[in-house]
Picture 1 (tube, rainbow over the protein chains, first blue to last red):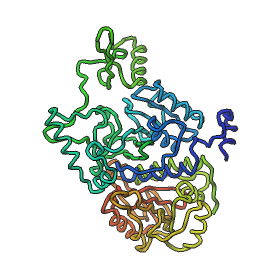
Picture 2: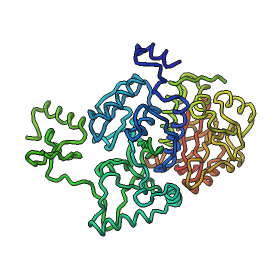
Picture 3: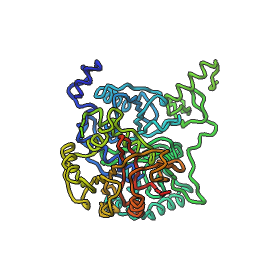
Picture 4: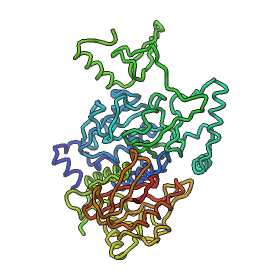
Length: 301
Length: 189
């Protein structure tokens, strides 16, 4: 069946605009699909891929987008978030684009989505084995901070020569008393590769460890795909005497829903200088609010 | 053997292959409509003119002709092939020549596709293979009929130097498929 015929059958002929289903041509999809399979087979290893042009500038989520477009089918339900928010410009544009070239339905509900494309957050709600999380990655190479040469970082990964990285972390502790990396905190995957988990906060790292879900990472500008299969060990780099810790929100709560157990964004009022906090995951925050409305109480009071 | 190809079939097939490889040992039905379509669908999803393949086993030439026809992929020697199709349950050691990638680019290791009689959880007669590793919660067992036990032992040896190695799919006559990436730790019971 041709894409135009399928669209016609499903009453969406107006949306076709003569594009191939999911925009990318089938040969390019095949290449991306082969690379995704290799990425899954070698957890944490960065697989090079061609990264064809898209009508979105590189650096705006084209890596994640290419993975999503290679995965998606008419029965899928797509959710796109940017820093946890369903309504930000990058998320809305990507969602509209994928909707236009596939006709799939979209959602803001984490539980309903079959594919979630995300920039810099993992949804608060636990994901299942039937869902796939696609992460947009600006800088796929975790070792770039300590080594500028791509050929050299390839060698280092190949030989599992990570001494420079450990030294960098040690020096960080000497300078600041603890490891000062916030987002992009390096992890070891399946006890072998050091991997950049994309700029998700430390808060999200434990959710990568032995998860039910498949995580796919796409860096369009850097032309790399990598993956964490389900039930895979993902361990943040840490020292015995300086253990890894997540962000501390003790004593703080979301201004809208009152949550004290979610990752919070700090909002500073420019006039008064007051600091307030909001859930970063907006759809989860909306759900908590709706639950409170049903129960007739508000945790934020 | 028929060949069917359209964007929906290959998209669905890819999702099943991805599920199979990210959950090693689980058995996925690739072509519910017609079991005979399983193999052509799988090959058309993965192969094209940009990659090469080799065939090991009986009816090598006729399989090579069919695969070329379905995919426009290039036939080459086992040692250079990106995909290797083993038509009967054992490669008789030929699989040891397969590409395993390099330490810098381990993804260049070959993908092996074994054509087997059946894949199941309960069959009493087949080869019992236990798998551990990424994608598997604790341990999983699959029963493969039509695969020689020494083939799994060979794959164990080939993948000993992870990340170098080969990744496998097993496809049976019912169009069911099972994945076994190089990160899996198989054990024959």
